[in-house]
Image (cartoon, rainbow, N blue to C red; front, side, top):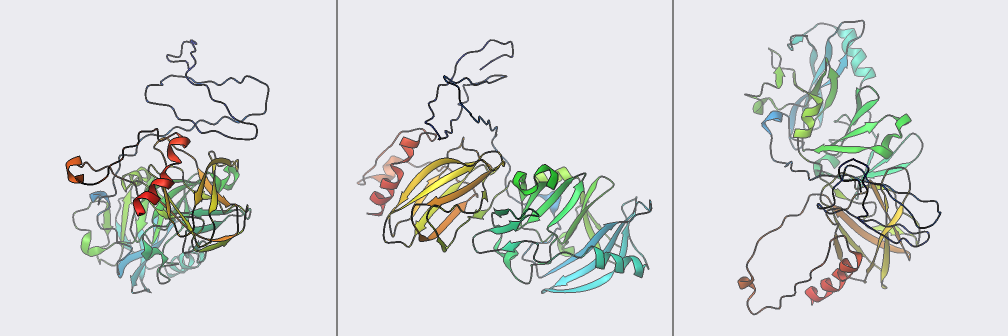
Length: 410
């Protein structure tokens, strides 16, 4: 480590990696420097990947910035399809729609002017063009019991966490825009209550996807306009007092307008799910990759319906380049549920699983976070108390957790 960037190096770690294996090691807050480098004791073909993370102190509490956006659970909202008009008109066209109980009614055609006024226009050809060319695609993704399945243009399969269960409602599917370019070669992907940054296909697309924020809003459509992010899906009864909500004079059209960067104020990414849930799996056949990167707290739950102990191999792709490396193995006894809390320093972009035997797997990962709670030992009088001290980064320290589960159950 070069601590001050003056080319003075000192050794801070020495790790041994067996042939064909991988190793995850974390740095403590005391190991600081401007530059880091790696040496090996013999010639080899090696991969070294550094991942940098920081604590995400955002909450998922209501933010007044988005007051007036309709909840995904709302039975009624004012939506609309958006299109930036061409031919240098510099105006955003909006076909306003009323969504109620799964039914859609056209309110009329409106334009958002350069003074951010929503004005009704009589332009049936433009309105019809928007309805035909910018309709929200259906079945662009598959919402399954375990996760959201995305198959990209290259036929690669990716799985993303689930959010509010209301997004899985068949009445709501096809109601919300999934993907749209809002900056040059950079899409916003709004999937099951999480906004993601989605690079262009020539930048490897979904393999490099990154969650921005999670929410429970019924966002019907979104687009960029004059450097702003504009969204439809407004609850008129809850929009009073928010300057980000723009409403037409006849109150039949409404949008939210702000900056793209405002999305980071919507709430930190959270979700739950996994690549398998009540799934028949085959031995040594890897699951689909499931997104785990950029969530600050991660919990894994494993169980199965077999009659023998099943070994789960956990593999991590730290970069999104399809280089999966074994992270850990967990042995799960029949009829038992094993829970694992990933250590704070853990980082990887995608995770996948293999088992050593065929079986029927129940699996769940939770990215909603965990919280420490203070309590007093005096509250445990006449009870057995065991304290186990170990590092969250240490595999030998984590392995006994399975035995603890059995002890607690008994």
